[in-house]
Length: 375
Image 1 (cartoon, rainbow, N blue to C red):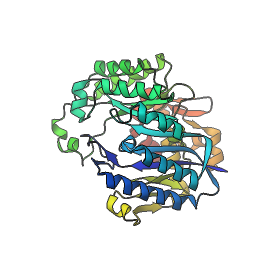
Image 2: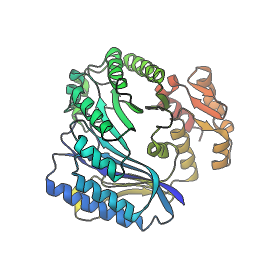
Image 3: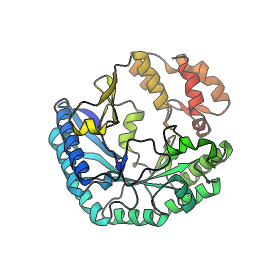
Image 4: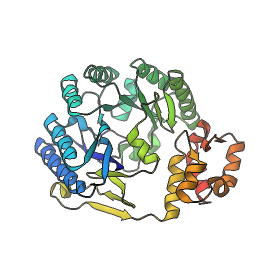
């Protein structure tokens, strides 16, 4: 059977962070949570009928803060998935979590339900930086949540941290990583802050005390080196893992494999089409279609997408895999455009093909823009 990744969006949070542009609604009423669970289960059932030839081998429940859902709702959602889809016995089943949600009494039954991976948001170990982000937790809250998840039986634990945030320095970023490394994470996601227009940060853009580009570059490079010294290896621009603990679900995105996203603001690449839902929560709860966009990418668009996403990965692009997939040579099509970046040390030749260096990953948008002009 063909493999499928399944993403389920839970759009609820305790509070909205100042930088957040995700589809999330703070402090939902109990009735709203129950109605949303029912609507999501209906959508799961509807899509299951179209996926009889697929086995779901990764399930990712993101948000928002999925662990705000009461356990009966989480159980209902997982039961709906198991009823509608063929769920692989060794599926990676992830839930996102924020500190001060969950707890051992929550995590233990969650583990029993079949969840085997948690992604917990730290962002920073420093109180001033967390306050600047609008985060509603402390380092101690994160440490307590992490330890309770571990005691509940979760060995596959990932943490999110952020670079380029207000008041951060390269030194404070490394201190955040040291605090995290003391907990022996198996996976770390280190994302650079993007200031989106329709957020509080976007509205105060000119007044934000952000580190400059040199400081962010220094943080990124030194942080990657520190993680690798502790056996947590870079496998994507913003992601690091102990061997064998790479996010199987997210690798589907970067490898251009099929996935379904259900719930408001969720996106899919399935059956030769890319499509996405709107953020209209009320319409979703009422059972109305919230499909906002749908397209069937052309072969050239698929090729460009593949180049853009695969070059995010440390292993880069395999000449053979590229030729097998697109019937053309990567080097003959893109080699001339890559040559200046090879000479500058921003790209490299590998045994299989080509990849960006770590320095190149810092300017990947520029490199990819130049490459895709040749697509």
